[in-house]
Length: 124
Image 1 (cartoon, rainbow, N blue to C red):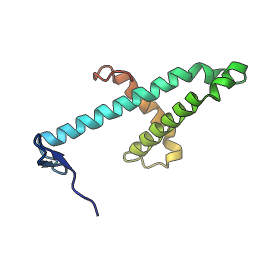
Image 2 (cartoon, rainbow, N blue to C red):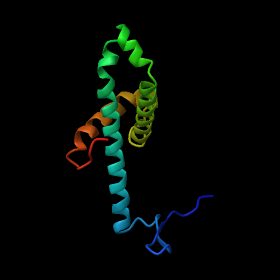
Image 3 (tube, rainbow, N blue to C red):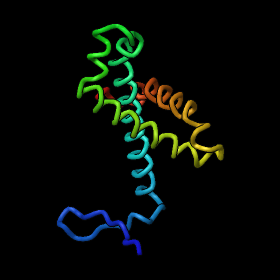
């Protein structure tokens, strides 16, 4: 059973029903989804840029230290979650299995990250 999503009014009263896709509310939801998507793309691209050198130098002693750091593991988990979510969203438009879409999902993330500054979304 699902409960209706409701936006609270200024005085704590229940506001409009979030399932109402007419008018300004639907535009608000689309803008929120767009901003969230662009911000996540920027975050993922930032993680890739931060660790690009270490990933390119595997086999070099200091690279192994970076790859084993807690910061790298945390960034890797965040990036993987963003990539998985992008892949799942892409699945609504592309019926190939998820294993075949991951490269396209990565390209979508990088393209969105490039578009984010134009849309006014700042880097994390």
